Image (tube, rainbow, N blue to C red):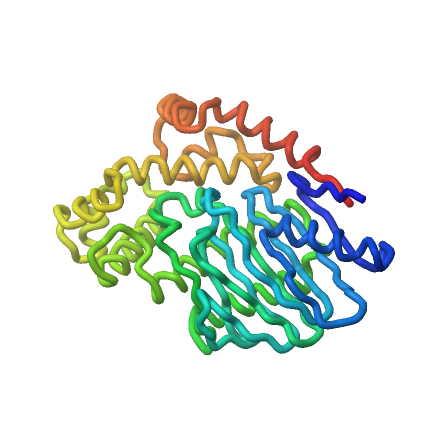
Length: 330
């Protein structure tokens, strides 16, 4: 028996819909679509359910429940994705690269799709697990080298990590009711909270030390806060962060880009987001263009087409069709 899930934007699989003989194969196929493998389960009867949804930005969200089992992360390696996971119910032990790592229901597990890392979640009781795959392009160039992110655990005792964990738990509770329109706000929030949490824990970019990583993140955050200002420039960002213009240019060179290029392309990404958002269907292309700091519509259309490959109008029409047609159910 075959189960076709690839490229589906929404699906649900329950082993209860199949015979006992079929359940093992169905479960392995469904978990494989999440880059997970079950190599052992402890119950005489395998029982599991997965609810999967993909956001318009490409985030893959899966709520998994099941009987006790050992789950192994099997990322493909060639995909530039980051992922995170939380255990909402059940007892678990975590092993990363054959080392036992402290992990409980208040922690967030994260990593990149790097096949060199070996991750095992041993679920020793009935469990509920939420996993999220995040394509690197949704972070734009605030995240330079995804494969440099090793798997690890975020402390959620307080601060940003605590808020992120609470948000993920809420997404799990309401996942069934969420539609494509709802996911725009969720995508934005998850990106910001996840980036902030990671910046406090790992050296994400091609910099010499952790201090430079945090400074680059702070500069990017200040650009985000001023991105709608058409007069935003290097001097403005330098004053906000109390760092010389020369040093800011050096950081962006280390990150593999130029300062003005970053702002221009970041504005294009934000315009793409609004053009794809059905809540903003009443906004004209020029309104979206000016909203994000472009002061010339003709210039915006030209650089958008160069960056994206099609015009803003064609991009909006393409995404409108995708929202209506790229949803299938299993």
